[in-house]
Structures are given as structure tokens and as C-alpha cells.
Length: 129
Image 1: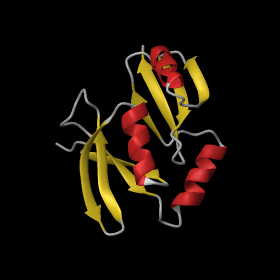
Image 2: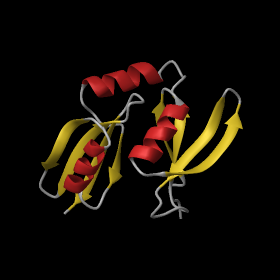
Image 3: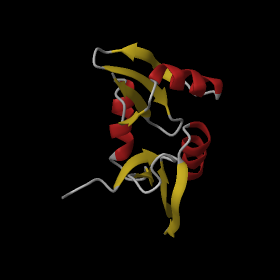
Image 4: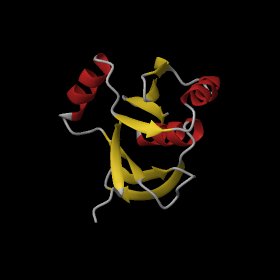
């Protein structure tokens, strides 16, 4: 059986991303290993510390910049994270200074919101009804 072990989000600055993803979003650091000029730096949900790891991957490849810029310009999230209650999470994160490009919105079977991760990405939060 195949399962997801690690997935990535491209970031402009790994230290800034680590601070945002841990201090604001509430993930915990799992792995931090030097890898040349960068780090193999992953975070996990504290609710599932042995679950899927999110790699805070350096955005140095030449194709990454134009790709991310196009997604942001069109308002398209790079990835989506599940939360128990989008409305409550938006209020919690706003209290921490997180900026949203889409407020909590009822989309029928799902409620979504989109935030700016300050590292070059839009991230969707979603709660299935």
C-alpha cells in the first residue's frame, strides 16, 4: 500500500517559514538536518507526530518563482490543510496577525479560507461538513 510520507511547500526563507508554521499555524518541528546550503526541515501536526511530514523546501529552483507567482496572482492555494473549524481557526490566526486572502466561506460540502504564509504561498484551510 502506498501512503504519503512527506509533502513539500516551497518557501523563500526556511527560518522564517519554520517560525510561521510553528508559531502561527501550530505545527511542530520534526526534522532539521543540514543539506548543503539549506536544511531538510520538516514539520508535523502535533495531533499526529508520526504522520505526514511537511517539508519546508527552499524555493531556489528557477521554475519555482514563476509558478508560485502565477498561483498567488490567480488566488490559487499551493496546498490545503484540514482544521476542525475553519471559522474558529481564522479568528485564532487573525489574532496572531495572519493575513487572509479569502475569509471563511461556506462552499457547500466544505468551508474554506485562504491565508498568506508570508513565505510566498497561499494556503487553504478546510473543514468538511
